[in-house]
Image 1 (cartoon, one colour):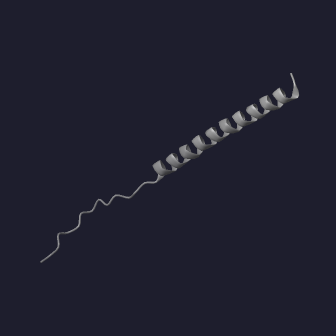
Image 2 (cartoon, rainbow, N blue to C red; image 1 turned 120 degrees about the horizontal axis):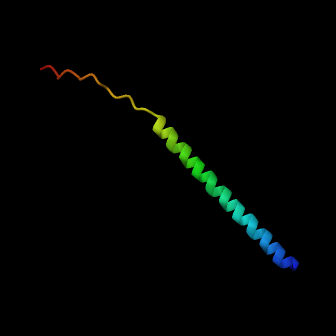
Image 3 (cartoon, rainbow, N blue to C red; image 1 turned 180 degrees about the vertical axis):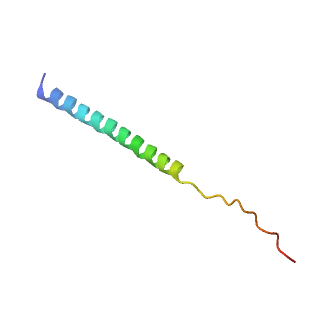
Length: 54
């Protein structure tokens, strides 16, 4: 294998590994955001307001 082909293959493997790492990182990032949003509970008022008095 000549050096140019070896450099090309090494570069391709590095680019592919960076792409896979980025994909996994973004997926984990968005999964964490979704989990955090599901964990936030908005309090719901159960008491009813009295109608305005005239």
